[in-house]
Length: 281
Image (cartoon, rainbow, N blue to C red; front, side, top):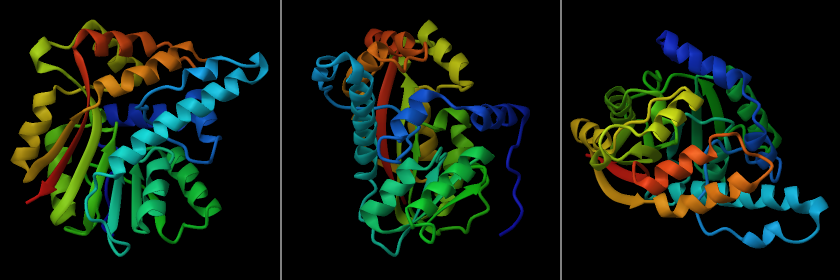
């Protein structure tokens, strides 16, 4: 494989540093439920009965429920990857601690490559694959999603799960289009700001500052996909479906201080949570 640059700017180096040192309980405690460590949010109706019952087990019940909702989000994304076969190769762009890659392998039996610019995330995820005995089929690489160095046309499906806000969409979709086989599928679940609202709201600015990211407007996704031979086949607005997750998280022992900003942005219409699936033509 040709040599590639892992971080291409001071900004990317700051993002890598952030995730190299990140040990947020909301990511780690949830992953401990079943060994699947997600780095995204959840969708679906909350089982509010987790707030009832013995106080001494309340935190455990809430942790399991939050993890269930995050797993439902991952399952929903993976269900849009199209007609995936065991011999296909899949790419998890911005793979975090590897949860979605492991679930994709379990679901489809395919070879999965995960990539991250965080060395600690890559090491953690590879260890999880080894512990599950799938390290011959699921591998994580210290790579940049804008310049992976992987072979042109070598993937049947690629996804970003809440990681597009760390890169320029024009460069990202150019690389994804290069990597996908003709007829392959790209899927993202992402938060984007609502063009109809106007400029980014105060809550979106708070989210950007919290995660050192840059949330894109909804229109940019469709424009840059069109510019890079990615034709949407499904667009699902998950905004209403994710609000209950945030309402539960705001009541939990795993609050991070950003919950109110997410709830405000979703409820005032300035922020949307979308799934976009597109075919490479």
